[in-house]
Image 1 (cartoon, rainbow, N blue to C red):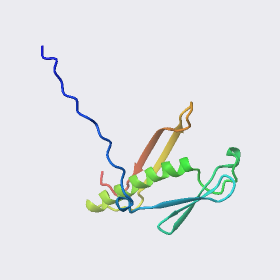
Image 2: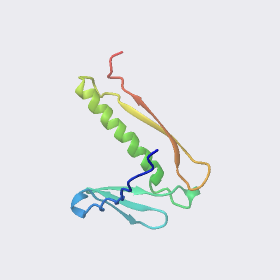
Image 3: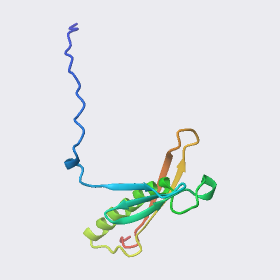
Length: 121
Protein backbone atom coordinates (compact mmCIF):
# COMPACT_ATOMS: atom_id res chain seq x y z
CA UNK A 1 0.00 0.00 0.00
CA UNK A 2 1.38 3.40 -0.98
CA UNK A 3 1.20 5.75 1.99
CA UNK A 4 2.73 8.76 0.26
CA UNK A 5 0.61 11.84 -0.01
CA UNK A 6 0.99 15.41 -1.04
CA UNK A 7 0.10 18.37 1.09
CA UNK A 8 -1.60 21.15 -0.81
CA UNK A 9 -1.51 24.44 1.05
CA UNK A 10 -4.87 26.14 1.21
CA UNK A 11 -4.94 29.84 0.67
CA UNK A 12 -7.94 31.96 1.45
CA UNK A 13 -9.10 34.11 -1.45
CA UNK A 14 -8.23 37.76 -1.22
CA UNK A 15 -11.10 39.90 0.06
CA UNK A 16 -12.89 41.82 -2.68
CA UNK A 17 -11.83 45.38 -3.26
CA UNK A 18 -14.29 48.27 -3.21
CA UNK A 19 -14.19 48.28 -7.02
CA UNK A 20 -15.49 44.68 -6.96
CA UNK A 21 -18.49 45.70 -4.83
CA UNK A 22 -20.40 48.37 -6.75
CA UNK A 23 -23.71 48.00 -4.89
CA UNK A 24 -24.34 49.71 -1.55
CA UNK A 25 -26.94 49.64 1.19
CA UNK A 26 -26.71 52.11 4.07
CA UNK A 27 -28.36 51.52 7.44
CA UNK A 28 -28.46 54.28 10.06
CA UNK A 29 -29.87 54.32 13.57
CA UNK A 30 -33.11 56.32 13.59
CA UNK A 31 -33.78 56.26 17.35
CA UNK A 32 -34.95 53.60 19.75
CA UNK A 33 -35.13 50.26 17.96
CA UNK A 34 -35.60 51.77 14.48
CA UNK A 35 -33.17 51.91 11.57
CA UNK A 36 -33.35 53.84 8.30
CA UNK A 37 -32.28 51.79 5.27
CA UNK A 38 -31.23 53.54 2.05
CA UNK A 39 -30.84 51.67 -1.23
CA UNK A 40 -30.18 53.64 -4.45
CA UNK A 41 -32.17 56.58 -3.10
CA UNK A 42 -35.05 54.44 -1.84
CA UNK A 43 -35.73 54.55 1.88
CA UNK A 44 -37.14 51.83 4.13
CA UNK A 45 -37.65 51.74 7.88
CA UNK A 46 -36.86 48.69 9.97
CA UNK A 47 -37.86 48.42 13.57
CA UNK A 48 -39.31 46.27 16.27
CA UNK A 49 -42.93 45.87 17.34
CA UNK A 50 -43.95 47.23 20.73
CA UNK A 51 -43.61 43.79 22.37
CA UNK A 52 -39.99 43.76 21.13
CA UNK A 53 -39.17 47.09 22.74
CA UNK A 54 -39.79 49.24 19.67
CA UNK A 55 -42.49 51.55 18.42
CA UNK A 56 -43.47 49.47 15.34
CA UNK A 57 -42.05 52.10 12.94
CA UNK A 58 -41.41 49.49 10.26
CA UNK A 59 -41.10 45.83 9.45
CA UNK A 60 -38.57 43.91 11.50
CA UNK A 61 -35.24 43.03 9.88
CA UNK A 62 -36.37 39.38 9.89
CA UNK A 63 -39.60 40.29 8.09
CA UNK A 64 -37.59 42.28 5.54
CA UNK A 65 -35.29 39.27 5.03
CA UNK A 66 -38.25 37.00 4.25
CA UNK A 67 -39.85 39.74 2.13
CA UNK A 68 -36.66 39.97 0.07
CA UNK A 69 -36.83 36.23 -0.65
CA UNK A 70 -40.51 36.43 -1.60
CA UNK A 71 -40.01 39.48 -3.82
CA UNK A 72 -37.06 37.79 -5.56
CA UNK A 73 -39.24 34.74 -6.29
CA UNK A 74 -42.04 37.02 -7.54
CA UNK A 75 -39.66 38.89 -9.84
CA UNK A 76 -38.28 35.73 -11.44
CA UNK A 77 -41.72 34.12 -11.65
CA UNK A 78 -42.90 37.24 -13.47
CA UNK A 79 -39.97 37.04 -15.86
CA UNK A 80 -40.76 33.38 -16.51
CA UNK A 81 -44.39 34.21 -17.28
CA UNK A 82 -43.39 37.02 -19.64
CA UNK A 83 -40.86 34.85 -21.48
CA UNK A 84 -43.54 32.23 -22.07
CA UNK A 85 -46.22 34.67 -23.19
CA UNK A 86 -48.32 34.32 -20.04
CA UNK A 87 -49.83 37.21 -18.13
CA UNK A 88 -48.39 38.47 -14.84
CA UNK A 89 -51.90 39.59 -13.88
CA UNK A 90 -52.71 38.21 -10.43
CA UNK A 91 -49.17 36.94 -9.78
CA UNK A 92 -48.66 36.68 -6.02
CA UNK A 93 -46.09 35.14 -3.72
CA UNK A 94 -46.96 34.42 -0.10
CA UNK A 95 -44.26 33.71 2.46
CA UNK A 96 -44.67 32.06 5.84
CA UNK A 97 -41.73 31.65 8.16
CA UNK A 98 -40.86 30.25 11.52
CA UNK A 99 -38.10 31.10 13.96
CA UNK A 100 -35.86 28.55 15.63
CA UNK A 101 -36.87 27.71 19.19
CA UNK A 102 -33.31 27.95 20.50
CA UNK A 103 -30.56 30.56 20.37
CA UNK A 104 -29.15 32.19 18.41
CA UNK A 105 -32.35 33.74 17.06
CA UNK A 106 -32.71 32.83 13.40
CA UNK A 107 -35.19 31.91 10.69
CA UNK A 108 -35.62 28.13 10.81
CA UNK A 109 -37.97 27.63 7.85
CA UNK A 110 -39.59 29.58 5.02
CA UNK A 111 -42.51 28.38 2.91
CA UNK A 112 -43.16 30.25 -0.33
CA UNK A 113 -46.34 29.83 -2.35
CA UNK A 114 -46.64 31.18 -5.86
CA UNK A 115 -50.03 31.96 -7.38
CA UNK A 116 -49.74 32.48 -11.12
CA UNK A 117 -53.25 32.65 -12.62
CA UNK A 118 -51.67 33.57 -15.99
CA UNK A 119 -50.36 30.04 -16.46
CA UNK A 120 -52.48 27.80 -18.63
CA UNK A 121 -53.82 24.65 -16.97
